[in-house]
Length: 177
Image (cartoon, rainbow, N blue to C red; front, side, top):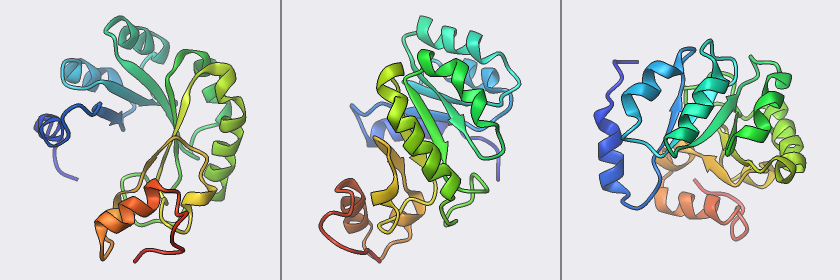
């Protein structure tokens, strides 16, 4: 991976005007990146096992009018999520073993966690985001309002058709190449 190019945030905003820009901060020290992007993003997602004080960071997001969430991966204990559930807008479940590497198979443990979170989300008021392993074959098993499906769309023979298939929950076709 090369250096982080924060100019891509402005590019995303130009490409999709009116759409909230969400920054998934893949760092043990997310405060550094939050401070550099306060004025550029609308939503921030921080890994639940970050070394910075997430309670303080979540409060700062709220004070700045940002929506905020926590991110879980199989490398972190599920129990780390509990203190944050009443205070976040989103819980992102990473559905693959190696975040940042596209095209991996989905993890059953991640699907199970998304199902559990779906059962309690109304009590706490958060939405679920699922990232990784999302494709036409797995979309019907994923309990999430938002999904991130980079390789399923970008590597498809017909990216637009693939995106539509995922948006519809694969209701209208069995598979997309």
